[in-house]
Length: 386
Image 1 (tube, rainbow, N blue to C red):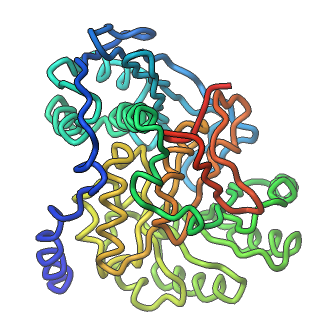
Image 2 (tube, rainbow, N blue to C red; image 1 turned 180 degrees about the horizontal axis):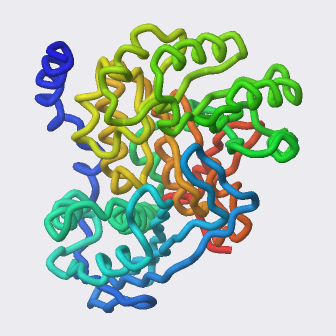
Image 3 (tube, rainbow, N blue to C red; image 1 turned 90 degrees about the vertical axis):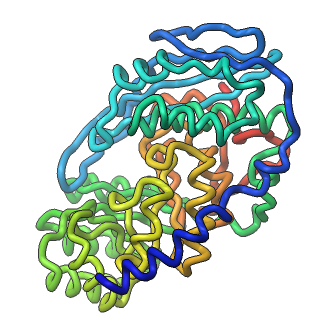
């Protein structure tokens, strides 16, 4: 523990240097910004207006994890408009985040962005949102994504290009196989035929059976495992990591409870596979303390309050020698395309949330031959309404 505190103290001094250089160089746009909202339409200002509304995501299959199962995900869609240009964002709220359509709508309705002169002041807007209320990460992410989409469209450039990232470095994305009956698992594996990596949800007493079913269906495809805090014994967790390493696994995500820091560090030190933090990390301030506890972090926009802080988290993690994974909730192609703009910074990606729903409102990032493919001709986040 002393070593981790020492590492944390050394890294915190670098935080101020992590802010996106692209944001510092953005041109000023002299527009008046105001926003607020109700359940459907927010207040219109002289320059910018915000509209938001609930939109329930319908899952193609029941989504079964170690701790719960669901067939829908609550979601709030956000649109921010200035001078006839509209940026889109969303807040996706799986149960464990603690947010709801009601809480997101209340937070968005309480915002007063009229004090800002233009939509490019993203960092100041984040500081303001954090001052209005703690938490509400998904609600803040919706505003952030819409602002990035809007400002990218104003500049006529996608955000991966604004950040100076090489789209050729974007990784393959995994396709998620939830905990389910053997016949459903086989059906999902067949559905995932175009994908080069499979992500397997674990954490119950049939973990080994799941691996064998997948290997029976697709013997050679790499897999990664997400236990969603479902493993409770570090010795058994280590045994499972050795078995998975023999079965073509790339890494294990959040094997034990996020509070179980000592056991996570013990497992990370001994595991033949990288151990990646998910529930243990939300925002930039969490990253430094995880050095020595995990090998890498899973960044999700709905936890990080959007793209602005996610970029900082990825930059800091890489500077600390940690691996970067980009993950997602169940989302439309709006949120997935926004996260994909960061993908050249990541070793791993699990950006399949839009593929798991049947009512996507957007056409966004494409997966070609299993790889995230960013379109340089689509400005902003790279998603358009259909």
